[in-house]
Amino acid sequence: MKNPSLLILAGDGIGPEVMAEVRRIIDWYGANRAMAFDVFEDLVGGAAYDAHGTPLTDDTMAKAQSVDAVLLGAVGGPKYDDLDFSIKPERGLLRLRKEMDLFSNLRPAQCFDALADFSSLKRDIVAGLDIMIVRELTSGVYFGEPRGIFQEGNERVGINTQRYTTSEIIRVARSAFELARRRDSRVCSMEKANVMESGVLWREEVQKLRDAEYPDIELTHMYADAGAMQLCRWPKQFDVIVTDNLFGDILSDTAAMLTGSLGMLPSASLGAPMASGMPKALYEPVHGSAPDIAGQGKANPIACILSFAMALRYSFDQGEEADRLEQAVERALGNGARTPDLMGEEGGTPLTTSGMGDAILAE
Ligand code: ATP
Ligand code: MG
Image 1 (spheres, helix red, strand yellow):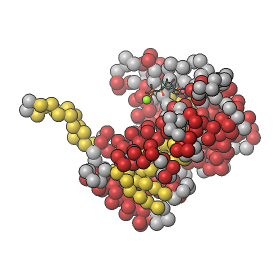
Image 2 (cartoon, protein in one colour; image 1 turned 90 degrees about the vertical axis):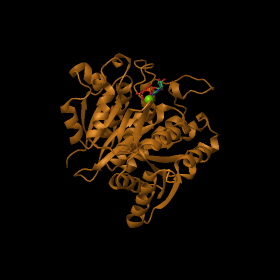
Image 3 (cartoon, helix red, strand yellow; image 1 turned 120 degrees about the vertical axis):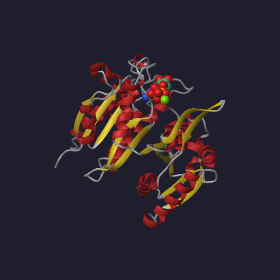
Image 4 (spheres, helix red, strand yellow; image 1 turned 60 degrees about the horizontal axis):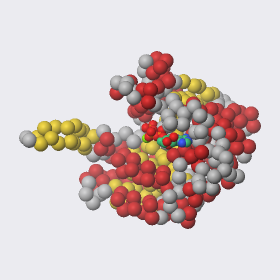
């Protein structure tokens, strides 16, 4: 049988530093679990621009389309700030998302017990938190036409259009229901059906899909503003939240901060199923290239390692190994392993990026 294939695009700044720790974990799987991956590496973002004058070559794009999963580090940095918009490092990532048609963005908000006191909220609100936000990523108000700034008489008007088709709603809702089946079988759908027609359609289509194909899933609906409030008040009431592009942008950042550091947050972006039956997929930490700490061994590799755990679960059908990897992270943290971003008032000596990698590998 063919090995599962993975394209690693480490990118810029701390991207290569955190990705090095994932490489060690992949090697560990090869040596200890007889799980071999065909790993390809390539350039993206500023690194690709420096080498080829473009943030993503056609060749890299084609590789991304052909593998089982793409794992990306981070792109961008001050060196590239003055580049033309069309060749900025971020365009490389946007092209990947667009051409792979990754319409479903999964952002877990999970609070490891060892870090519960690190949240800005009270321990009992966040300890043991494990929710998943599914955000529609390729449509809605960020893409709808008409858009632009126009002159109307004496006034200028800025226009964006929220637009959703039934198929766009159904495909992202389906990914949320499928996810819920692997979790706690509960989905809460959020929109503003009280004031937006696109929200009315969203609510109707999500409910119809649930009734027709997912009767085993408990579906509730909430207005997104009330949902934001509930997310801060008592987030553990949720399991999977599915929502549109704009509300998902805001709600997923809100949920992220329930759990502490940016250095802890993984993400997955999924598209339509491939011939293998698994979805097209790109995994990446939520954080950026962090130029302020790049090259100093200070970056926390956990977000990138947890992104690989998501790849194990959603692209390689290795849910148990994903659980074990997450447990190893949890135990390392429980033993007191901390990179500088996870240091609280109590002080102590922080680990380097590879020191955190060691601590996780040891578990
Ligand atoms: P982008 O526009 O690419 O999202 P950004 O400037 O919004 O980038 P980051 O690059 O993620 O954000 O950095 C924000 C802050 O968080 C920085 O101070 C950075 O050092 C810190 N940070 C981000 N990722 C990590 C990490 N993995 N470990 C430690 N600190 C991090
Ligand atoms: Mg940012």
